[in-house]
Length: 393
Image 1 (cartoon, rainbow, N blue to C red):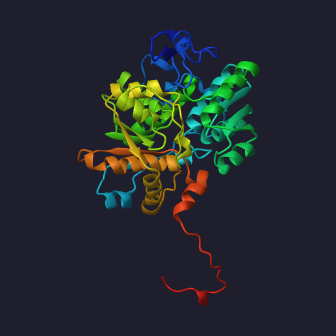
Image 2: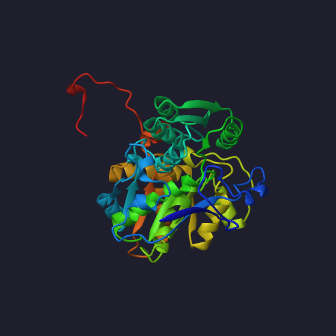
Image 3: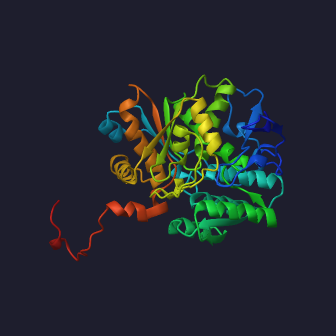
């Protein structure tokens, strides 16, 4: 296989080198408080063998990847949940079982390999929590320095996780968007490789592997995929994976992709419905998808429109209810962003054609943010000393 970068706006092609992050020409039109202009994707050409492996569809050679087992996460067939919902074609892709308990490991894994290939020793990024702890963990396996800009409001568990892995962490007095800008300013002044979502083309390319795995596990393209969306980078990765499969003749169609947004952080939904991005302060229990300006916004909305995708908005109450329903009916404890994808499925369920095979992307483990999960459970106040104090339930 051969690989190069292609601009998602003007179509210009570039070699895969560290100096290219966004299109040099289209990025000149970048406006403050707007999504990135000139997002680059990896374009692949060539023939793929019948016994193809996922690694063969990635633009960095296998020898540069660190020895940490990213990917290969299970695709659940949750029988009890299927029965309760009357939906026999429901599947859950559990990416909370990646090494740092997040789908973001897929992007970090490829970014780490890219940095190793080009002898770059420091990786820099902003994160609401998952991408940062992910890059810190993968970077630790690779012996790479990771510098992280994290909003002060990020969940404590994600902060502690990143620090355990040895990342240098700067807590930012502001939102994720502020942290993003500071991280870009850091690399401009001090160097290092930016891992920022969408800004680094390897982030979308790494996340496409979840689509490749779903295809191999099912043996076909699903009818629908539900993915929580903030910046729109995972969404674009899902599309990229299925588009690559179609381009290579391995699949003949794409799934219908449902981007699920929290009502309190719905910039993609507003742009999809009305056109244009206007910055609004975001707030949602699903911190992983809480962004004011979706950095991959233009590219994400373009793909949804071109490929017949949909956007579903759900409330925080629906997200927390979906989180508990997944836990109690399937045994899967996912963080609020993963639960948002399931909440979107519950919302769209009446409109799905009979017999649809639907895949929910559960993007992170629920222990990443127990403060959110703890809102709807009651911890017993009473402490017992013997069974004499227990009644049969």
